[in-house]
Amino acid sequence: MDLSFSAEEQAFRAEVCGFLADKLPPELAQTVRDGRGLSKDNYERWHALLNEQGWLAPNWPKEFGGCEWNAVQRHIFEDECCRAHAPRIVPFGLSMLAPVLQKFGSKQQQDHYLPRILSSQDWWCQGYSEPGAGSDLASLKTKAVRDGDTYVVNGQKTWTTLGQYANWIFCLVRTDPTVKQQAGISFLLIDMDTPGIEVRPIILLDGTHEVNEVWFTDVRVPVENLVGEENMGWTYAKYLLTHERTNIAGVGFSQAGLAAVKRLARSQMHRGRPLIENPHFAARVARVEIDLMAMSTTNLRIISGAAKGQAPGVESSMLKVKGTQIRQEINDLARRAAGVYAMPFASEGVEGSNEAPIGPEGTTHVAAQYFNNRKLSIFGGSNEIQRNIIAKVKLGGGA
Image (cartoon, rainbow, N blue to C red; front, side, top):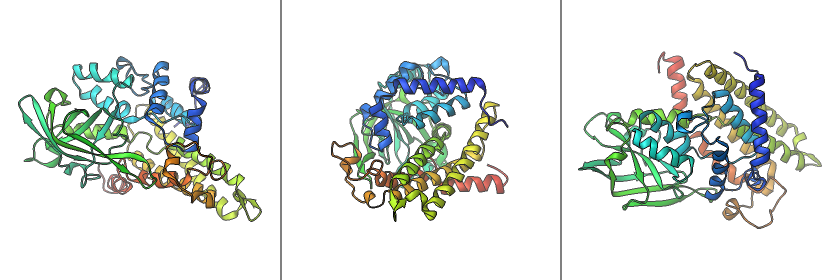
């Protein structure tokens, strides 16, 4: 195992840093740094800059217009983007659907949809979770019945992230209710403008509109929008989830978040001294920093293995559990460091406001981030499910 970076990798890091310094709009970086909500225009602006550079699809093969970067290059790119406070790359089309189309989609689907993902002509959302079918996704009830050259879809999806922006949704639907649950699921691509689709907002605890319910009532979907084979959707879903969980530990986000906590704690006073000098607070910061360093080393170990062609195993679940715990602890430290300034909360301020901040720099959005990131331990496979995987693989002798 080699945890050091080669000269070529260091040169690549310098290239990434130079690009971010030259091309990342300062006002966009400040929005991310402040924790304010990003608009559709914000995301698309950053996507366009990356696409112009040829860096929008790091994990795509070159034949489909991607960078085909290795695991180390992707790690360096994500790390530096977090340090620079670049917006995240919205993953649904680029990192989740695209790998499925590249492996299982028809040539026609690849030629049509992949270029439109790169150009942001299509904005995709994910239609997986349902009421009663979250971690137990195989129990989904949204059904698609074949009627000639179309499927008729009825049902409901929930927690559809950024679905209010999307013009397409990729969905898991039940096409055969008579067989084992996993065996009767298909993978459909559905135009959100199709009659019978209704998007209903879910307003979160932090006051933002980030997720939605999507209802399907007699929605007709062309048969050519089926990906792969009918009733093979569970196979494609599992393949997609391996990409959803990529970098879900969020090492770069945690490093940026911890740096922000330290800045805030140095500026906030407690009994006449900077909060960072308070023994109890400093001990919590030190504890989470040690955990983050250990997780970062584990992450590098996995990356080192991936560079040699080794597939990540149960370590991915370990990183997911520990990574989300660390990010939530950092959010809690930020909220505590902000003190009384974390209490005033107006949802319109999260989405962007011209009003002057109530408290010192770095305090305005800590409460909203704390509330919003309670979700981290649930999505992408809840931490309870990940612990079951760890126990089964390490203690039960099999996957």
